[in-house]
Each structure stands twice: as C-alpha cells, then as structure tokens.
Image (cartoon, rainbow, N blue to C red; front, top):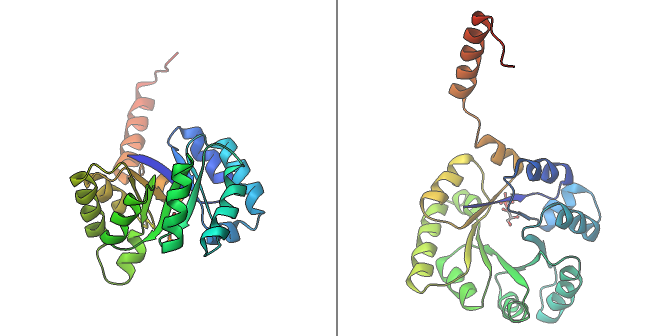
Length: 217
Ligand code: E4P
C-alpha cells in the first residue's frame, strides 16, 4: 500500500519524506487555504521534495476552465497529478488529460457507480472519501470493498486512493481490503507506528540494560 500525505504544509512533508515512508502528496483548496501560502509556489516546493505523485486540484467547474488550469499546474513538474471533481466536466477532463499522458486523481467519490465511471474515464486514481462517508451514516469501508471488487472484475488499472482518513484503523481496514493507496494527514501516519506497549518495552529494556553496566562500543 502506498502512503500519501494529505497536507500542504512543507515542513510536515519534508519530515515524512526523510522517513522514507512518503510515496506521494495530496492537496485540496481547503488545505492550501490552511497553509496560508501561494498555491503554485507551494505545489512547486512539494513536487521538488516528493518525487511521487503530487495532486493539485483544479477549481474551475467547466471543461475548458479545468483544462486551462490543468495546463498551468502540470507544467510545474512531471510528477503533478491533476485532481478533478467527479462531475461530467471532470470526467471529460480526466479522459483528455489521461490521453495526453498526465496522471489524474478523480476526487470526491462517494459511490461505487462514480468509481466505475471514473475508471472508464481513465483515472489514474479514484479518491473515495471514507471519513466524510462515515460522517453521514454510511460505512466508508463498504465503499472501498465494492470498488475493489468492481475494479478487479474488469482489471481496471485505476488505483483506489482512500481519502478523508480520520484514524489509523481506516488505514488498516483499507489495507485489508486491498486499497492501492491511502492519503492521510501526517499526524495519522505518525500514529500508525505508536503503541504504548512499545514505549513500555523500551523503558523496561533500558532499565535492565543500565543495570548490566555495559556499553555497546
Ligand atoms: C483527499 O484528497 C482529500 O484532500 C482529503 O482526504 C479530504 O479529507 P477531509 O474529509 O478530512 O477533508
């Protein structure tokens, strides 16, 4: 499973990149707003830090506007992935961009039918939002299972990018279902390796080691 960081904060991305755990980055207009920084400049910096796919979202709602914005964004770096919404115009832009050799992330997916049509439009990634799905009383993971089954039935190459991840169990459940990628805020990626029994074990081993009076080297 690939790990993408869902953030526009350069320091967080740099820290994760240094761990070797970072396979890509996703951003959206809300995350850019939170960063308080210039969009194009931020995407350029992220793409230089992370060699994997970096999603930059268009904000136009019509096909021509999306294509104009995509042209500006994809010129930033070869690893830019254009993020388009799951609408008719977004799907049309997805097909045009994919045919032109650009990676596309189709975002705001909330149904298996939407995921099926995004795959037919040639999406590189489909982004089902599991957390927001849970928020309105559906089980986001059921959606991931359905999409996995559909994509496997037809050998679609579109990668399932689990988004709107809210806690480590979302990551574990998505991995069990065979999702290709998950994107999460860096805080959640760091939570994945934390366990109180690991901390307790380290503390007791260190205490016993000190009692031996030895040193390594
Ligand atoms: C994914 O690409 C989105 O940026 C993101 O996962 C949305 O998450 P949220 O529902 O926590 O805003």
